[in-house]
Length: 339
Ligand code: ACO
Image 1: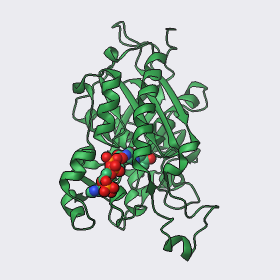
Image 2 (image 1 turned 30 degrees about the vertical axis):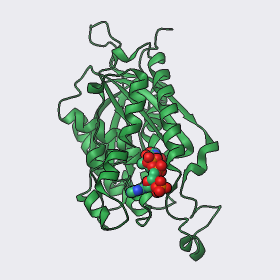
Image 3 (image 1 turned 90 degrees about the horizontal axis):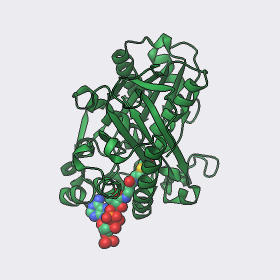
Image 4 (image 1 turned 90 degrees about the vertical axis):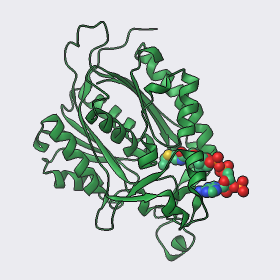
C-alpha cells in the first residue's frame, strides 16, 4: 500500500436543516396500500420530513448553509465557492446555488449545482477538495439538499415510502499543516473516489421535463415528471458498488476498517447498509444511522447524519469517518475524512 498524500483540505464545520412536517408510516398507510410493518422491515424507515408548500429547495439549502457557516465562525462573504448538490432544484435554470448565494448574502463567488443524486455530497466534497488543493479556492460551502416530496408519485407505494426532504452542509477549508501528534494522518479529506455506470440510468430516473420529454400535458398524464425506480436493481448495485468504493477509499488512505471510527453512509435502506458493512467487516457500533427518522434524503443524507452526530458530540475532532453513497446515474463514491 502506498502512503497517502497529505490532505489538502478539511471539513471545518457542518450544519443541517429538516423541514417541520413529520410524515409517519401510519400516515402513508392512509395514502397507499402499505403497512408500517412492511416499510420498517424492508427499509428501516418509521417517518420522514416533508417541506410545507411555501418552502423551496434554496430555502432549506440556505438554512443548512447558514448553520454550517455559524459553526465554522465564517461569514458568507468569505466564501470562494458554493456547490449545491441536488436533483430537486428550485427550477431548471438558473442553478439553485445562485438563489442560495443571494439568500446567504455571499459575494459573486462561483455558485453552481451538481447532479449526482444521492452521491451528490461526496461529489461536491471531492470538487471542493480539488479546488482547494489546486489553489483555486480557500473556503467552499458544499450543500446537499433535496425536496423529494415534490417529485415523488404519492400514489406509487414502491417509491413514496422511501424518501424525505432535508438539507445538510459542510464548510471546507485548507487542511492544517500538521496534525495532532498521535501517529495518525493529519485532519482532513484523506481520500475520495467517484464512479458512474450510465448503463443503469433507467433503473432510477425522472424522465420528464428535459430535452427528451419536454414539459407537456402528455408528459404529466404519463407521470413522466415523477421518480420511477427499479428497486431491486438499485439495491444490488448499491451493495456491490458501495463495498468496492469504500474499500478503494480506505486503500487510498492506507487504512483498513480497523482505522475507521465511524461510518457515515447514505441512508437509502438499512438492509443495504447492513450488507455493505458486513462485507467490509465493520463493527455495527461504528455505523451511524438516522434513516428511521428521516428516510432517504438523497444528497442531503450524509451531511445531515454527519452534522447530527457532530452536534451530539459523538463524532469529535480527530475521528476518522468513512463516507459512501450511491444513487441515480447510477453514480457512487466514497471518502475517508479525519474530522
Ligand atoms: N408496501 C407494501 N408492499 C410493497 C411496497 C410497499 N410500500 N412496495 C412494494 N411492495 C410489494 C411489491 O409490490 C412486491 O409485491 P409482489 O411480490 O406481490 O410483487 C413485494 O412488496 C416485494 O417487492 P420488492 O420490490 O421485491 O421488495 P424489496 O425487498 O426489493 O424492497 C425496496 C423494495 C425497499 C424499494 C428495495 O428494493 C430498495 O430499497 N431498493 C433500493 C432503493 C434505493 O435505495 N433507492 C434510492 C437510491 S438513491 C437515489 O438516487 C434517490
